[in-house]
Image 1 (cartoon, one colour):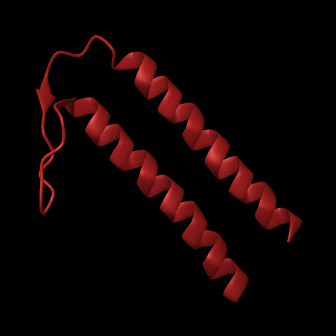
Image 2: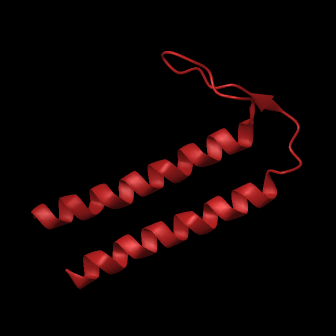
Length: 73
């Protein structure tokens, strides 16, 4: 149980640090795009930010699913 909490804490801390670096590094980016959802579009965001947040959210989901799978075994 303690190992799972440590892994979850590490996952969120590591990804929060990546998000912080992404926000700092993306400030001078001029290429912007909109993301199409089913019902609406988002505001114009830098393409690197869209790709970076997709990677970070996938990393968080993968870390949480890894804990769920190892808990079932």
